[in-house]
Length: 376
Image 1 (cartoon, rainbow, N blue to C red):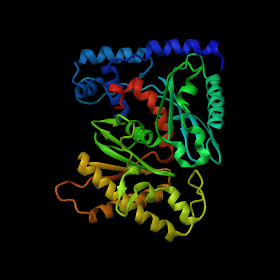
Image 2 (cartoon, helix red, strand yellow):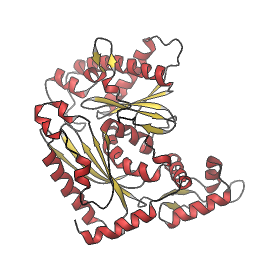
Image 3 (tube, rainbow, N blue to C red):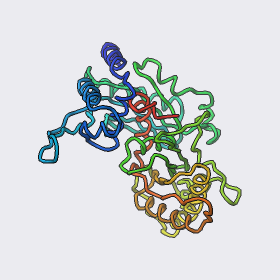
Image 4 (spheres, rainbow, N blue to C red):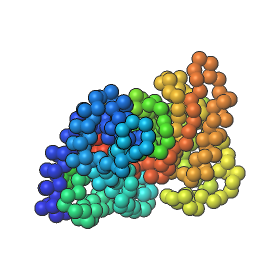
């Protein structure tokens, strides 16, 4: 990395990312609802029109908001919708998976501008560090000196050493601290299932309530919990570990509703994209049916505990498989007793395979731009 270019970016980022809670609230509203005129922002925030004018002027001057074309012809004064400026800030995301590591540069509106990936038999600390350092240096070297990098987020399964003896090198290896060495911006790390949930919360295209449970089906099933519009990670950073939830039969959700279970039945590994999933339809149908029973049990249990109105099902699976899984979960939930509680709405997630890498990039975004930091 060229240190001479990094120092101005770091100085600039620190001075211009210290936003007030009101400024964060405005940006969050525009992010979730799309372009909004000042009058709508005043109504949504409860702030005075003058306060909104002053705050949005500052956000425009600092490069976080763009003014759209004036809208005329409606009742009242003409209005100017405000939208997020795509280059307002940039975020790096690193996703560590069972067979694939990914690095992405994401802009302020959640678009992936650069994406790199590398396949491996299993991840090693040295291999991941080499991939990440080289990729970050290459990305930073391609940016203009005025580019504003807010930080690097890392999405990784916790307790990697539990995957087998070949993963022992991850025990006591602090990936975030090692990658932070020499970087001019902060590094954040969270569980990959939690980051998938964060991505749906911040970048997702679905209209969701302020409280929901997110179930993400990948090599292993996992989950996340959103309460009062914020991702909850818990005191041990394991809140929403729905893959570990016990289900009938003395098993856990991850024993059933995981891609690894489908692979065992197929007798082969499935590729890290949506190609090559073709196989015996009856095997996938049986896996979907059993997974749906387990997901319905977990979803209803979470509802009994948290009183959530919605459950989101997403994953690193083809859209048709996700759709069938959501439909089967609705059917399975209807068969379960629910006296005393309301069954939650089951909806499909909107980000699929990109959820975890976008969620990694969302960690620094949440820290600097979401009200309260978004994580709790």
